[in-house]
Amino acid sequence: MSIQVTSVYTNTKEHNTKFRTGHGQSFLITNLQSGKKILFDIGTKGEDVLFNMNLLGIHPDEIDLIVFSHGHYDHTRGLESFLKVRKKEITIIGHPNIIEPKKVKFKKWFFNVKIDIGFPKLKSSLKKKIKFLFQTEFYAITDNIFLSGEIITRNEKDGTEDRLIHYNGKKWEKDPLVDDQSLIIETDKGLVIICGCCHAGLLNTLKHISQTFENKNIFAVIGGTHMLKFNENELEHISKVLVEKYKKPILYLNHCTGNFAFDYLQQKLGKETVKPFHTGYNLSF
Image (tube, helix red, strand yellow):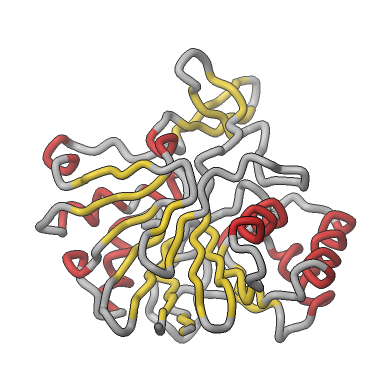
């Protein structure tokens, strides 16, 4: 079965392309045999996502399903513009916490500032077009595309931060981002993992998935890995585990991976192993 993964929207692009970019993430997963199309995340600026979809020859009504990696704005805010153009209902799969209140806090001068970074607030007319299917456990979307489920065991460093907070129903606190999930595609070459931000941590995510798919090699990882604040020692550890435990999967990285992390991993693992995945790029498996 042939699956194509396309970057519809992310932070970067090649200079000679017309694609629009921004801080965010959106992938199109297409079954080239059946034609089934899944959007994994939907970016920040809906008009830019729709512009890129048009360049790719895709109309919102052709999308069969939306899956969200987590609830942050840079993966969900494009939904409003998408729903305005789409004429029919669509199912959205994700963790129930994708719609909980989320904010980022920081100091500006002498003030403590909190800014909403959560799921978009939609008008009732747009909400009627959505059917939510909330999942916390491993879930089969198709016969070869899966959602990881919650990645609770995090013995390795993850991508949570003190400044990223959520409302737990009683108070605001540091967000453990239990809603962070990744997609898994089972291919002839092995498992292909697609990460929105990988707030659960890359190594934690790989371990969780490898335990679910015993005796299956991980062929590639695509997407954001939230290693913006990882230091050299932490990246050295990651590169070592990738080689020794996972037989050096190909890394197609973008979004929140961070330039330092990308350059370090590429230097350690090689340009044939660590590659960028810009807006408009696609891979077939």
